[in-house]
Length: 214
Image (cartoon, rainbow, N blue to C red; front, side, top):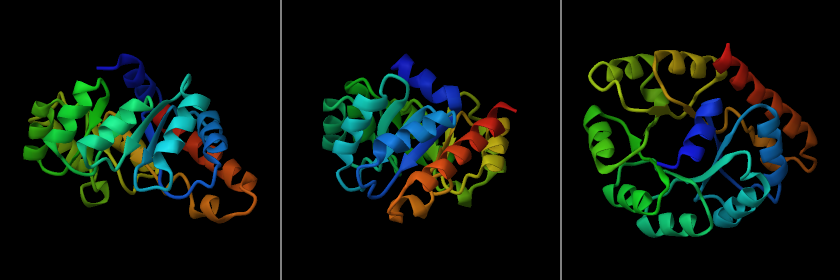
């Protein structure tokens, strides 16, 4: 396990999900999120120029934030992420080939799971944590229920997670949460001047941070 990456994610317990056309604003976005107290960024591979964005973020913020890739579906995508220095791999599904290649290359593996069987299979394949997705269909009580028979697994509920829900998830035993559109609103992707949107994003990031340290 990459302990430095692991501890950076654990420091804020929020993985900020960057999905969509960032229009070259990824550096200032990272700055805003970090200023709000967050320490982990996931760039989804179905975003324009995703590998370029990851590489630029690593150069800009890799000394203070964990930076990885999301929506990773194939082992060769893991290889490309590793080649540019990405630190963790997130998938919406559980594919043992992706998990295996991720671990072979020394990255953290967070595959997507839904059922207890999937959680166990992913962990046996080498996953460091499991992304519970879609969390909107599962809820806080599902995390509590999973931790009954499976207490030692790191859970990362993702989808529809507000600051209030983030706190509830962590209190229920989640290791971290994945947050996308609840944190980075559509305005950021559309506005000609992103300064106002960045201020709002920083404030939202701070709200998550405050909720999780209260």
